[in-house]
Image (cartoon, rainbow, N blue to C red; front, side, top):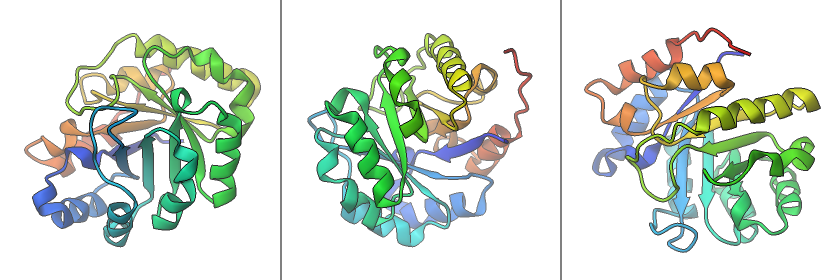
Length: 222
């Protein structure tokens, strides 16, 4: 399948958010990526369910909601009702991850797991049947505009191998420092979804930046 591009709204201009959503709606982007931060799991605080609900009214494409929060199980149903189509929770925030993944799927959303840069990918080996998406953090979560961590590439390759061995149907998403400078390498490693923040909304022509990310045709190396 062709890879997906998910512009990260955290990098958008919130003083003209309706215009930013209209641009993404009209572009070749596939999803909206929404970063929810609670000031506890990560240092920053962004927005919650009411804002996601307002964004859903503007969005003509699926909402990919990334919960960087503690106790995400308390809020899964609320974010689903607000309009989330994909809900990702952090492995590091879920002592009962299997239960939370089942909860997300029962709500009707796709179930995602996000991994911090230091978390070994093999920890997901026994959960692959319950996962629809793995969000590989290629920066430390909590702040936009960070530099890409290149150790992410072998981590993606390892995860891709695990998925193929298990014959699972899982998307590999990469979040953090993604742009034209590394997108081809990420896709070659096995990524399916590119989350792009500053590389889209900081570009002179955001629609063109999205188009260029979508146009990449990597040569598979595995």
